[in-house]
Image (tube, rainbow, N blue to C red):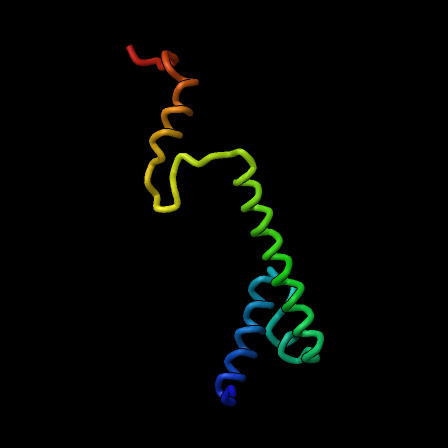
Length: 94
């Protein structure tokens, strides 16, 4: 069971998320005074939008593109060699 301070914290977090991710479309007082059902609906819609955006970005990366840097920030050597082949002998160094 949630305590009153935890419930209050959750409400303020929800208000913050709507104001922050609403990108200027909402201010704190508007969201705070909004009916609960409408605030929950708005929060859910914004959350769904950003989840879909993240999925699309993930699918875009997985769509045949490879990264030269892995998730740990290290260079993916085989991919780097493959990508570098197109530039062999094309440098301006003398």
